[in-house]
Picture 1 (tube, helix red, strand yellow):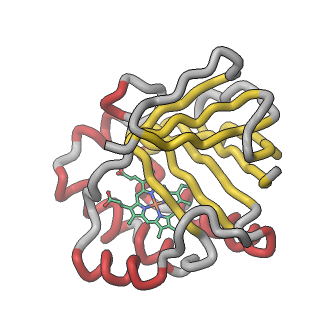
Picture 2 (cartoon, helix red, strand yellow; picture 1 turned 135 degrees about the vertical axis):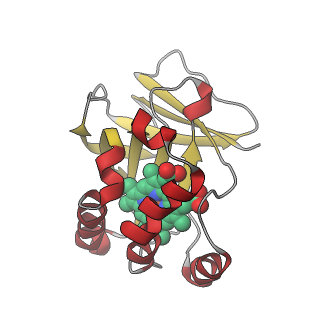
Length: 181
Ligand code: HEM
């Protein structure tokens, strides 16, 4: 399994432009962020904070949706993508108490997460990491990369998703906006 550590501190490829608590507790300020993917979690004595996650299988995507995603989704680390966002999210116990089919119902039938998201591809590249079972403070670490010119589109995307019923189940969310050093 591919592991990731997001390390915030005084060095890293990404300059932290802002850290804002959308819901719940804030994360401490830092200057830089590094996304470290590998076989092991990274550790750093200098880091202000570290968040760990793993890449995992898809829970909700149907085959036709996957085909639509694969047809348009861009890779990470495009030279043109000089902006990024790390958005760690924790969902409520009410969410985790739902059955799988109920969660899928909220996620797509009610909230149209995939349909909305698809409108912003290929401008936005994304990667989802899971961390609920790692004893971490969040359930998900969501990562996005885009060009500066697509900042307003990305702002609109997060605004639309936050207005959905899925977000009624979000109890902690921090938005970290980044610029490539
Ligand atoms: C760029 C457009 C986006 C697309 C195409 C997209 C697509 C998806 C897809 C397909 C999944 C389901 C993965 C699975 O089957 O397990 C997912 C999950 C998720 N996405 Fe997005 N997404 C987008 C943007 C966002 C944004 C901006 C946020 C945060 C503000 C976000 C937060 C999440 C979270 C937290 C999950 C996990 C939900 C759960 O398992 O309960 N997504 N996304």
